[in-house]
Amino acid sequence: EVQLVESGGGLVQPGGSLRLSCAASGFTFSSYNMNWVRQAPGKGLDWVSYISSSSSTIYYADSVKGRFTISRDNAKNSLYLQMSSLRDEDTAVYYCTRAGVAREFDYWGQGTLVTVSS
Amino acid sequence: EIALTQSPATLSLSPGERGTLSCRASQSVSSYLAWYQQKPGQAPRLLIYDASNRATGIPARFSGSGSGTDFTLTISSLEPEDFAVYYCQQRRNWPPTFGQGTKVDI
Image (cartoon, each protein chain N blue to C red):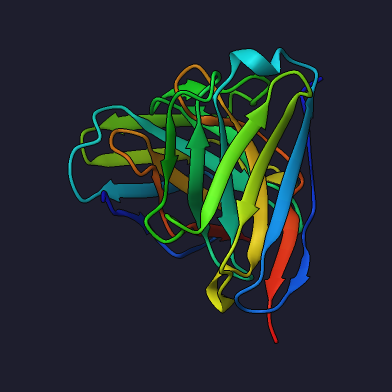
């Protein structure tokens, strides 16, 4: 069974930093591209970042470019999102998602809540 | 960036009825469109990918159609567990984008 379990969310002040982690199991993590998708409270879904299976290709949404860094450790079956210079508008539930064969988001974690507030 | 517009915003139906949800893209996305279902307090779940392919374990009452700029998600006969928010998403161009969602309620 595919499982994605996020951790690392919490309350942080504007301008602060946070590192999210996603532990993957139930599939060959090193063979799959991965993404982070977020959802502000009561709002819709926003793609944040993408990383290929070998980390050779990385993309970011314009809203987080230069502030967020996606990475992965295939030996540890883990995905990460380092977030810095956090803003109020970064407040959201952050989901770790697997990219399927058609680059759809085929599996999602339960999400971790990041709250940016003073 | 490709914008996706979903309609209606809210669809009020009864169990057993047919539900038809629409998604329109600001430019052609070919068939590179997916649909997701999200229930309160839960993560989204993939229903349909590449416009018409059901994801693993998705019941046959869910079907997708369309290409280019106009797409439809059809729920042939609503079950109580189908009342949720539905999102469309395109992968034709980076960045991948989502529609604003259609809420299907009783």
